[in-house]
Amino acid sequence: FVDGVESDAPRPRLNLTARRSRRRGGAFAGQVAVVTGAGSGIGRSLCSELAGRGARIVAVDVDGPAAERTAELADALTPGARARRVDVTDSAAVEELAAWVRDEYGVPDLVFNNAGIGVAGPFLETTAQDWARVVDVNLWGVVHGCRAFAPMMVEAGGGGRIVNTASAAAYLPSRVYGAYATTKAAVLMLSRTLRGELAEKGVAVTAVCPGPVDTGIVSHARLSGMGPVSAARERLDRLYRLRGYTPEKAARRIADAVADAPEIVPVTGEAHVGLWLSRLAPGV
Ligand code: NAD
Image (cartoon, rainbow, N blue to C red; front, side, top):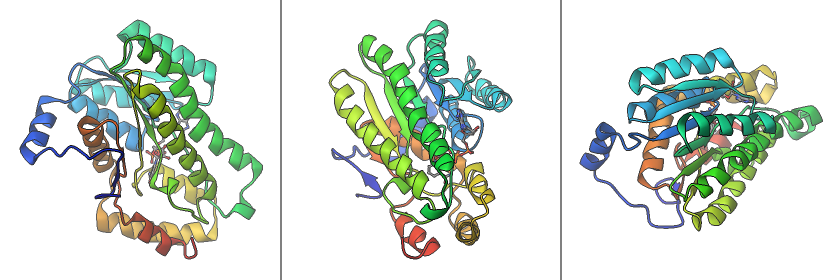
């Protein structure tokens, strides 16, 4: 890790003025970005961030009205945003989405496979159903997204980017989020594998690994009612207040990282997130 960023190649550094002018000028101007899990949290903020930099957004979520709201917000920044209600666990529906996007917008420049759910609890208390659900959304959802969009991006002659949302949890064994972390480690390896394969064909694949971000996913995890999780949640709340990890900040960092160096795997939280997590869950 260098500055919280894992890299195959030296990271090109932009000075502050260049970064600001990229933001103002819109590094994504004229591009079409498909974002799954766009109905809330990081996905919604990412849509606003990318639209603010000139991208036309396709906001995708299993929650249709939430996706519609995100599209409205993005459309106000860059006209042309649309919403689609799609369950990413349904491969046929994701294929249909890809065909729809190609018909309506052409081959997209950016695909963010960001939809995800949290499942919390120690291994011995995690049911087979919990495993099936979290693997279905977090891993299969990303596989379906890559399978649906990558071929058309390759066929178009390259230039596109696929960005999969993994997590800092992908690196950190945890007694609290074991099943979730397992899916995220898989997303990271999928992204690395695909990156090698598609780089030759001109399509860049990246995984982003956010640290803790204050979104619904963490509250949902709390609903599972696990003792260690509520203790962890209290500490997380303190961490959020201290560090200000908002979805907006995460989205800004993700967009910056993707704009600057599409081939890297950035950790958009902090490098010391491992320290925080080990305090949250002693013994990880
Ligand atoms: P969130 O719950 O606010 O947003 C997730 C969105 O995904 C929701 O709008 C939800 O409706 C949607 N979704 C869930 N299942 C879906 C499905 N089957 N098909 C389509 N959409 C579906 O959570 P978030 O924190 O914004 O999470 C976004 C991504 O970031 C997830 O992949 C998550 O694992 C990852 N992440 C989050 C954190 C964090 O601390 N919040 C940290 C690291 C990684």
